[in-house]
Image 1 (cartoon, rainbow over the protein chains, first blue to last red):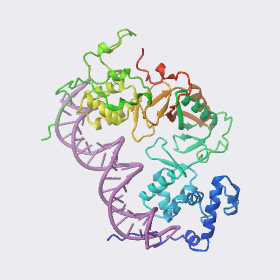
Image 2 (image 1 turned 60 degrees about the vertical axis):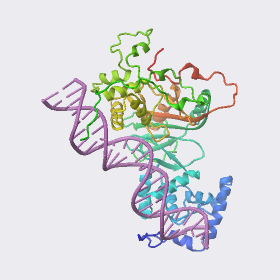
Image 3 (image 1 turned 90 degrees about the vertical axis):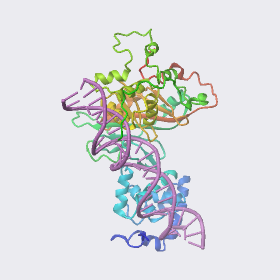
Image 4 (image 1 turned 120 degrees about the vertical axis):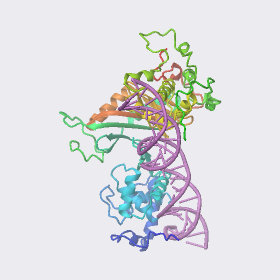
Length: 222
Length: 222
DNA sequence: CTAGTTGCAAAACGTTTGCCCCTCT
DNA sequence: AGAGGGGCAAACGTTTTGCAACTAG
C-alpha cells in the first residue's frame, strides 16, 4: 500500500549538481573536508580554504560545493541525507531570519518532496547540534539562524518584518552585571527592538557598520 | 437540551482559599517573589475592604471592591460582565506574570463557569484596550501583565520559571540610540535575561529583592 | 429591547510523534 | 546489512471562532 516517493526516484530538471558530486570520485574530498572542518572548529581556520573556495564569502555559491551548514553537519558527524543537504543549503543561502514556514517554501522550491515533518526534525537536530539557533521574535512561528560565536541582538522592522542584527557588547556585559545583582548567573539574554524606519529625517549621523544583511527597504544606510 | 449555566445563578461559592502546591519546599532556591499579595486571591469578597489598606488614602476611591483593572475597564467604556469582573480582579491581584493557563486556574477557582474561550477573548480585549500587555517569555504560553507607563525588563529564573522585573533606564535610552543609529524609530523593546540562581554563597551584599523592587507591578503602594 | 457577550465545541495553527518503509554509510 | 532518516497522517498544546443562548445597559 501507499507507494511512497523516494528522493532519488526522479529528479527535477536541474540536478546536474548534487548527485554527480556524490556519486563521482569526490567522496574522498568529502571526508577530507569534514576532517579539516573539525580542525576549523578547533581553531585552524585557514586550512579550509584549501577545499572550499578561497573566497568563501557569502556570495551566491555554486551549487556544486557543500554549503557552509552542510559542512558543519558533516563536521558534527550527522548523517547527510538528501533532505538535510537541501535544508542545509537553503539555510546557508538565507540572508535573513526565515521562520519554519518560510524555510518550507524554500526547500519545497528546491525539492517539493521534502516534508514539513522532516524540516522540523532537521531544524531541531541542527539546533541541538549547535548549528542553528531558534528565535521567537514576536510572531508565533519560530525563526532560525546560524548560531554565531557571540551574542547579538535583533532590531525588527515592524513594517517590513525584516530583522537587523546588531552587537552591543557593553550592554551584554551590563546585563550580566544586572543578573548578578539579583543573584543570578546569566545563561542567555535576548534584546529585541521593534521599530519603524525613519522616513523624513534630516540627519543621519552614524550609519551602521555593515552587519545588517536584510535592509532592502531603504537605501540611506550603506 | 443543553441548559447553560449562567453567571448569576449562584455567587461566591468556595470561600476557602487554597494555594497551589507550588510554593512548597523550594523557597530558598526560587526567586522570593513577595507573597504578600497572593493572599488577596480567591474569596474574601465581602471583607475586601478590610484588606484594603485603611492607612492608604489618596483621593477619592470610588468603588469599594472594584479592582484596579476593573476600574480601567470601565474607564475604557468596556461592558463589565461578571466574567470580565472576575478576570479583572484576578489580574489585578496577581503579583506575578501568569500565563493564560495559570489565569484560567485562578479564574476557575473564583468561578468555574468561566470558559477558556472567554478568558482568551477577555484578555485579548484588555490588551487591545491597552490595559494589559502580552509577553512571550520563553515558554509556549503567553503571559500577561498590566501595562505600565514605562518599559521594564524581565529576568527569568530558568529553574523556577519565576520572573523578576527590573528597570534599566540607561539601557533603554541606549537602545533608542542604537535604533536611531540604524535609522529606526524605536516603538518597543524587550530585554529578557535567562539565568539560574547562584547557590554557593559568595559574599554578595544584599540582593535587591528585599526591597520589593523586584516584584511590584505598580499596583500595590505601601 | 438590542447590541454585545458567553459557553461549548470545533477549527486553526504551529509543532511533534508513531508507524513503516527506505536510504545512508 | 543494519541503524537511523523520511513521508504521511494523526496527535498535540495553544489560541481562535461559529453559533445559539443569554445579559448588560
